Length: 93
Image (cartoon, rainbow, N blue to C red; front, side, top):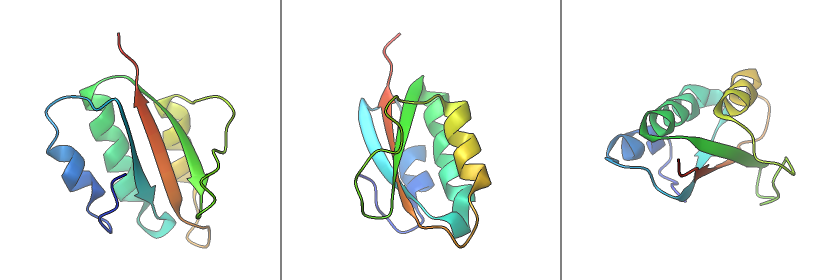
């Protein structure tokens, strides 16, 4: 889990190869950070995603979703919604 209070994208920029599984926090007020994280993961390889809202640690989808679906979720967030965690798992191709 990457939890560095808004510097998640900087941490991911330091990766030179994909990581099998990881999670990072998203905050609706700074969704550009989450979008930058998704873009970096996409540059590293093919991932699928899930997310949890707040501190529930419960996935919101029974099936993992594509980066396009994850990006859409983040883009639709409003500032009054809860933060949470995005989970990513690398698909070996």
